[in-house]
Image (cartoon, rainbow, N blue to C red; front, side, top):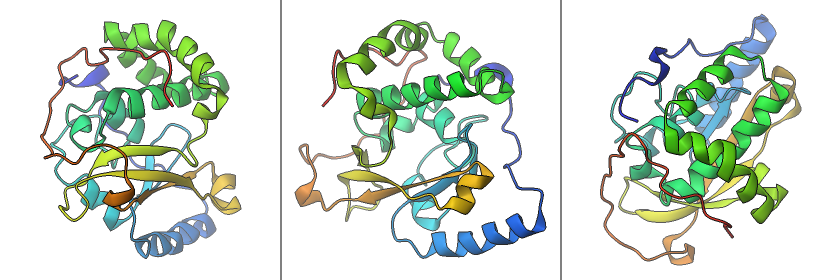
Amino acid sequence: MEYQAGGQWPQPRPAPESLRAQAYLQDYAALLEAVPFPSVVFDHRWDVVLTNDAFETLFRGVGPHPTAMPGDNFLRFVLFHPDAGAVLAEHESSWCLPMLAHFAAAMERHDQDPVLRSILRDIAQDPIMDAAYRHGLPHWIRSVGPDVLEHDGAVRPLWHPDPRWGRTDCRIVGETPKTLTDMGYTRMTLVLRDARRSAGPVRTAVRVRRAASHLSVVPAAEA
């Protein structure tokens, strides 16, 4: 999707109202910056609250997009940004389908949320993604099991712009303290794995821009 999905510009970053919560986030941002791996804090809509420099570095080659920048809304980035596959390897099976599964779960909990409903409308504008979401996704979840709805522990491939990493894997680690949970936020860290331990052949990264209908297949199962 290389158009402005849904015609909606990104909303301002979510922020807590209380001064105490804002002060906590400022201190938490300092903690986040000390982490060497890409780390992001987002709310139930995947609107990004905090990122660290390692996160910014991972996505530094991503081109501009009015609604789907990784530092604005991570779900929109995965689903709608034409450059997503240049960073998130095996983009459809390893990233799009799991994120669609998380989105479906969020819609069950927050079905009247206007931001989530706007994402749902944008999914419906892509016939292949809409078919994957409404028809293929339930079968895929039954095939791979309920663990697909859990980020923590998943190992997914990516392309890192730093040649010292290149084509590698990351393990997604969920590490959300109670205070962030109480604010409605989630923290996710992509722990980069040494290329020698990463699955898949090493090859030169090539930027791939997707056409509008980019979900070409809904696998019956993913290990």
